[in-house]
Figure 1 (tube, helix red, strand yellow):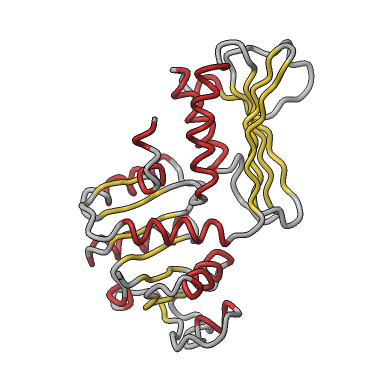
Figure 2: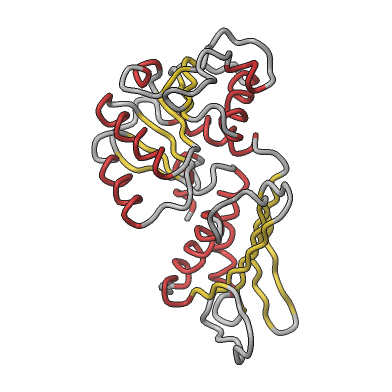
Length: 269
């Protein structure tokens, strides 16, 4: 079993990853925090509320990267890119669940994948990645006549909108319909907008409370509509998918891989 490390172990997803790694008895050998953090030395298990693991939190640097074979990162874009640079130098595989990347930042991920194996996905949930597969089928059957809208809801603390998952749903639908998402996407509506153009793909965003993550792809035709919905009730579902991806990365060649590949769904498209 490969050794696994977690970047940003003190974050919400970092703690979820620690919890799931313990539940699944994975070989968790490193959990890092920002260099100079006062949390350095705190036991990772006690931080996550799952009991003492005998694994103290350490600062992220060129030395700590060698404490694990495969790393998981759910931090922020700027921090993730710094971690990615360390991983490239140390030849460590990495699973990236960071969203809100700019085109330039994503290009840096693509460049790094020439040197190390990377799984990047806007959502690590098994159910969401199945949804990405299902919406392509729905689009091929209904997309030429139905109006397509994507509705997403997240907690008040989320910084990007629409969510990376909503954008991935839109991209999957656009691909199935041979449309350019950049040209047909509509982000919110206000005032006198005129009648809806059928070729567009709409996005609606809700932010509030502690909503983990809800996503719906709506295909609305005259007389009927189809809604494909995924609702996450725990961050552990994302952690489970990310750790599944980490195990899958063992012995993989350098390249940029998707959760669709991890789950074997790419072969079904």
